[in-house]
Image (cartoon, rainbow, N blue to C red; front, side, top):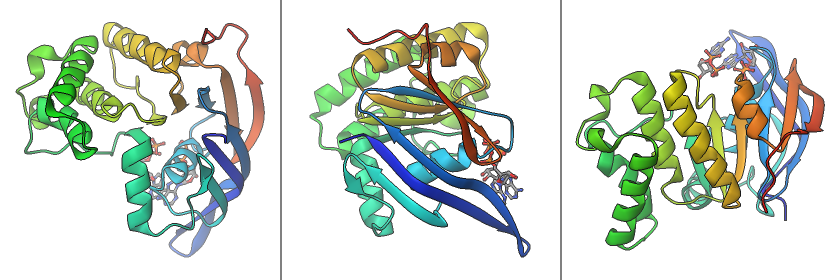
Length: 233
Ligand code: ADP
Ligand code: ADP
């Protein structure tokens, strides 16, 4: 089955009694292994769409299917379990655990999923190395700069090799060297066959994607393959 399917997905926020339509009937199917960049102007509903797919924002109506399973009708706890097993998140507000070191933050998801400690540690060392964070392993998240926190969040999201990576502007606060590390890692994740749905304004990120979905006023207005996309072998 596709990794993600949304059917006529709608989100209407209530802003002091005034309805604010943020997502207006989105039908989106993302096949396993696809790398989808979600683009569009500020306020077009990108974050809301990706938050709903991950179960972080409740939908107003419509359906969400993940790996062939209906997700939007699950209880909060059942969805939390599904998320933990199958989805990695990189969101600005999807927090790191404040009183744990960077190393422990990155290792935790694999340990929670039952990975052997040695495997969890090796994965953590690999990810921190790839993202240039090895010398920050013993720091607390609060001691890190914004861009470092962002890279730790990416490492943490990838610790479990989730079948689906959802990300909101993962290169937003990064200088070009750090952005390059993130892009290289995303390319690897993609070649490994993980599915990626990523909100981005960054043309470098979009150029790695197979497909760019453009939103405007909560609707998909363009959906196309990227000519220069790197395909999996
Ligand atoms: P984007 O990610 O494309 O910038 P958003 O999904 O953040 O767009 O927002 C889409 C629309 O929904 C905007 O009009 C925004 O102001 C509104 N919106 C987003 N979050 C909320 C919220 N929590 N409450 C009310 N309105 C919101
Ligand atoms: P993003 O586009 O990455 O969501 P924003 O600055 O638009 O960043 O939103 C930051 C946070 O504020 C999000 O949690 C979003 O849901 C919320 N938000 C955005 N617009 C509104 C709004 N009009 N009213 C209330 N909350 C909002």
